[in-house]
Image 1 (cartoon, rainbow, N blue to C red):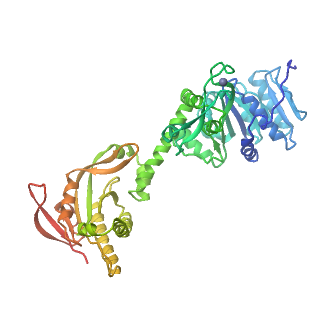
Image 2 (cartoon, protein in one colour; image 1 turned 45 degrees about the vertical axis):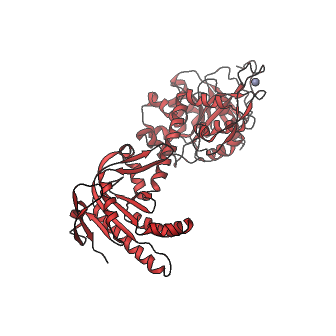
Image 3 (cartoon, rainbow, N blue to C red; image 1 turned 180 degrees about the vertical axis):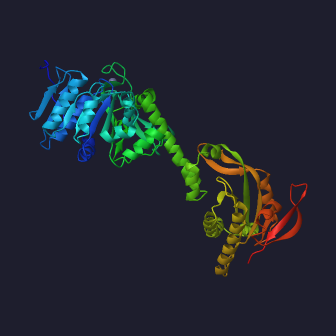
Length: 511
Ligand SMILES: [Zn+2]
């Protein structure tokens, strides 16, 4: 009955898990369910589990431990009782059923397996704490995949049972005898932590006699703690059933990367070990890639939000043709060029500061108007602005929006000019054209812009160059779409620079 050298149950403090105590307390104060520590054999999941149970019993509660192990290797505290169960389904059901009737004390089951899981979940349905270990290479919520073969894939039912999944894996710790500090540059740092934006000092493995030239000595645990409650359950279910990934707040989820990075930064783990672990363990590798993907997606969102309205950003990010938008696609757009008239002569005499201040005082209002009409600011070229309607997302009324936006801009500029008595003023000429372009993201990962390319753009620019101050010139294509709604008059055929054929153009009439 008693092993030769029973081990003491360690506390969370003794396991160097002080930082998680608060997290664990929060979970233990929530409604009871299955609290599982998971990992492959030898990762110390039972040690961690017993430390958590010990933390729980500090409140004075007794616990009942069920095991199939005749030589359970730990010395149990006084208020713990132990029952050895024969490894059959019937024996487990009987043991759990009898104890359910006895009292409401928490159960500890040292290993959840195919034979006892039904009985264990029966206990959990009584809304009591069940602390158990699961032998699995999966980490975090993916542990649930382990049950697929056991109880089918009713994720909702499985999630109902759980209150916490604590996953562990081991990684070699740095040999403090030979470790050397190393400066990691911004770019290299990003690969280790996509949220890092600065040079950091970390430690690298060197190797000495003490560590047999490995640079590492003992192994230590890194863990992931996931709280499963009414708030996280629907999110996790969405992930399991529909592959929809919504990051959880770090008060509910501490990832293994968070944990490993904390060890990396405090110098407990070396850089090479960290890199090796996150790229060799298939699940960690996937998590690592996912993390980078999330970061990139946030970056993309951030980039778009500088050019388009929030609503458009959301539409893009949730659109199934996001890939197309990024890759480039053929689509109809209405392109608007606004340029300052007679600015060049002003720019020759004014100071750069004055020029910038003057332009910015206009541009801020103009951008506001563009967003109101849900246009996209494609680019600023010196003192001119290129706008696009109908991309990145479709706008059926793109021509109307574009022309109305142009009118609103001209009116706003006139309004600003009226207030700037005795000051330099700016006047705009605007050109608009509609047609098919290639739209997409151009550039490198470092700097990428959403833009449209095609002759349509050139024609809009040429029309703008022919527009005098306060004038809006539109092409026949744009005119055809807006003529019923917006008052326009023909200005005849214009010969445009670089164009062999003449082009019919129209002037928008506005007050
Ligand atoms: Zn060493």
